[in-house]
Length: 282
Image (cartoon, rainbow, N blue to C red):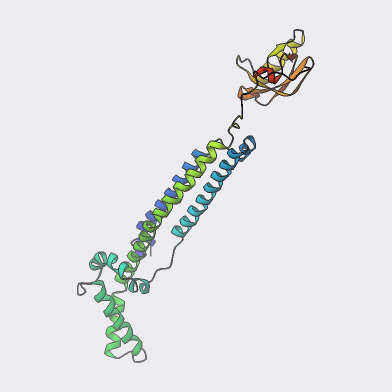
């Protein structure tokens, strides 16, 4: 017997599971888009309150994602369903009733009538199980056999409705935790890897380039590392030495992070560069 004939509502249940998987994929894609290009190593570039805010955002994102995973697992995991669950849930019976009326034999106008008659048939079959020639036993077993297929379809539809109810009940929690996680990841993406907020005016050090044939070697080094590009950005690394200093390249991307020794000297102190008088004696 094929899966479709044994469970006529199997495709509908598969659609529900596919919907849940689609929601999970969509939320994962949103989270990936928010944190794209941001790594935990970016926390090393910030300090103070910025790092605390970034860590708080990351913690909120992880907490929200963990809650979403738990909810999704609960929705995707199959729960056993039987007629006893349908009989003990009046709310579920009301949902199944419109479809059950079309499935049941014509002599039963409501699902409750059918379940009551089936209960009596089960009781008669069990009472006379040692007297198989008893008319009550014969009638009860004949009823149970004839209605077995209809009962299976009703139980299958009840299972589908139970899954639908669980998805509808879990949707508000998914949305709430999803927004919470997304907000945390946005905060993390904004503050992790950002430059520290300066506490005052930054120093711009005037640099005087020293002439000499060393520039030819330096030009070859730049070209070999970065290619033939016009725009270069660099920052001074360490303490400038007499006659030379070390530059760390920031751009272009192909040679970012490369350090080169440049024949040059700083012509003013950091204090003088930002308008602060240098200490006496210098």
